[in-house]
Length: 266
Image 1 (cartoon, rainbow, N blue to C red):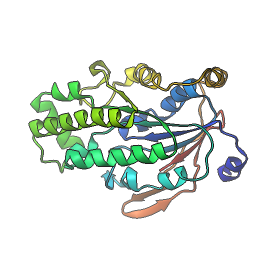
Image 2: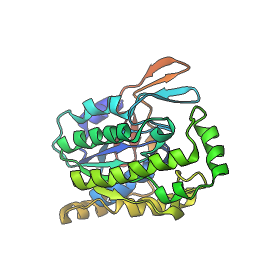
Image 3: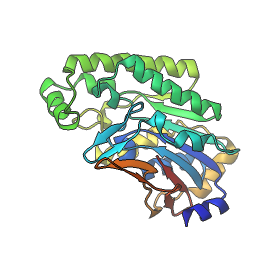
Image 4: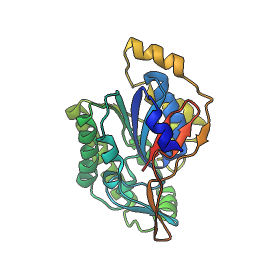
């Protein structure tokens, strides 16, 4: 049904979302916040998922997803598109606790940025919440590392040092590629230092998504189309995943919002 509807749809823009847990938990909110500045309805391409890695397959409980750079989002991105493209990259940090070195993580993020810039995307990216990471005490680091990343062998000091290298690397990447880099406020973060406090999500994403600059005409369109109370008419499902080791596929788009925004989930 959605495939036929998609062929008849007329989105005013394309939104690309790359991230992990924070993005997964607030997907609808983030789409709406970006549309507030950029207009809608939209074609949304999202590579998200709890524990998602930018470069390698990652598994959380029974579900395994490919790395963001290896998913099918990129082939869809390259499909014919003449609409404005807005991209949001976040949750850059899981790969530290998966044991990948900073230079490799930065290479993966750089590759994503370069693919998006080939499509003339306007890019906003969040940096690692380095203040929250540095202030985490040893006991809390050990607790959350063992809970969420049981295979990780990095000490707190090693993880912090790697996070600092990536934090600086993203600053340099943003300057080199001329994209918007948003620093995350420590008061937004929960006890684990990397996830947003539930009741501060809206405020944090309002702040972050305000970095999407728009023309006057687009701003007028955004005001016309803002529907912050819109609901999912159909929740999106992953195009490809493994559950209990078995491959599962779902045709895309698979998600639909009330304003006819369609979501491709990878």
